[in-house]
Amino acid sequence: MKEYFVKEKICWQSIYYYFNKWSKDGSFRKAWIGLSLLNKRKLEMSNVQLDGSHTPSRMGGEKLGYQARKKAKTTNSIF
Image (cartoon, helix red, strand yellow):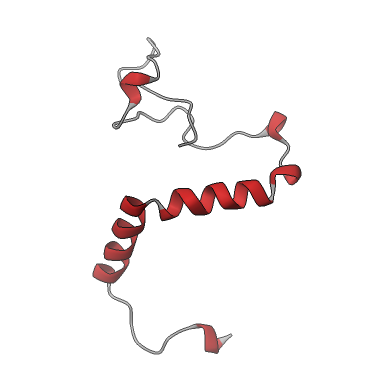
């Protein structure tokens, strides 16, 4: 297992840099879609409850709808 870990310490700035970079260039979305397509038949969508389905959306939420019982606009979209 040791061969999978580097001997150098990883600083938080490096993690932030790559997370930010991959978020902006769509890498996370591509990975999610790719994994979803590969495992599509294994998913039992009738029982899926994805965390964050009613999380306030700060980007694009106004285009998808509003739930009056909450103070913020929400979305049920995965993306």
